[in-house]
Image (tube, rainbow, N blue to C red; front, side, top):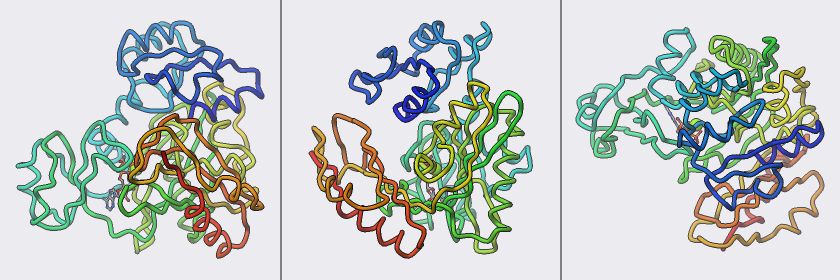
Length: 362
Ligand SMILES: Nc1ncnc2c1ncn2[C@@H]1O[C@H](COP(=O)(O)OP(=O)(O)OP(=O)(O)O)[C@@H](O)[C@H]1O
Ligand SMILES: [Mg+2]
C-alpha cells in the first residue's frame, strides 16, 4: 500500500518517509527515508513521527498512544488516532454503528469460549475476535451447536450470520475542509478457503437505489466519525436489498486497487489528497474493471517466483502490479492484476483466466 501511495506522491513532489518492521519491506528503496521499527512500539512510532509534517497509516495495528502524543504536539495525524483506536477493536466498531444508527448485523459481546457457547439461540452466527484479526483470521463461522468448539477464548463478538446476496465496498474520502467523495461501489468475491478477496468487480452489479443507499451509508460513517483520510466501508447487501455495514478500514484498501487504472483518481492519490488537505479528485469510472489478488500459491514458502507474467502482460487491458515482497507464503498478498473490459461476461472470463495463468511460487 505504501508503495502505491509513493507512486502518486512523486507526482506532487511530496517526500514520503516509511516506518516498517520488515527490513526488506517493498518500500525500502523508494522512500526518501526508510526506518525499520515496530509499528506497535511507542518509542519507534513517536521518534519516527517527530520528523514528519503529516503522519498517516496503511495498517491500523499501530501504537495509537504515540500517534495521539504527536497529535497533541501539533502534528497532523490522519486518520485521527482516537478513530484508529476505535477501529482496532471490532467490538467498539459495532458499538459505534449502534450508537450512530449505522445499519449493521445484530450482535452480542462475548468474553470467552464458554460465553459464546451460552448463546445457542443466536446461531447461526459469526464469532469475531475483538482485536488483531485481519484477512479472515479472527473470524469463525458457527452454524450450529456442533461448531461451538471453534469459538474464541478471548474478548470477541458474536454476530448473526447474514445470508447476503453480495458483498460490496465503498471507499470514501474526507479532507480537513469536510469535502467528501465516494468511489462507486465494488463487488467483492471471496476465496472459499483463505477467506480473503479473490476477485473484485467494478462497478458492483446492483440496483441504482441500492448503490445510492451504499454511498449514503459510507458518507454517513465518515461524517459521524469526523474522520480525515480515506475510509473503506465493507458492506453486505441482503436478499431484501438492505445494506448492512460489516467493517471499516481507515486507509487505502484491497477493494480500491483497480482505481489506479479504472477511475479518474486512484484511492492512493485520494488518500494523499485527503491527508494533505488538497482538493479531492474525481472518482468517476473510466472503464468497468476486475481486480485479481495475486496470492502466494498454497504449498510454497520462500523466495518469490512469478509464473505466467509475460503471457498476462501481452493481453489488452491487463495491468500487473507486483509488490516486491521477497518471500511468498500460502495466500500472502503478493500483488494484484487489474483488467479493464466493458463487457461484463468477457470481464469475468478474463479475470478467471488471469487467476489461473499467473502463479506466485517459491
Ligand atoms: N455476519 C456475517 N455473516 C456472513 N458472513 C460474514 C459475516 N461476517 C463476516 N463474514 C464473512 O467473513 C469475511 C471476513 O470477515 P471480516 O471482514 O469481519 O473479517 P476480517 O478478517 O477483518 O476481514 P478482512 O481483513 O479480510 O477484510 C467477510 O468478508 C464475509 O465474507
Ligand atoms: Mg473484512
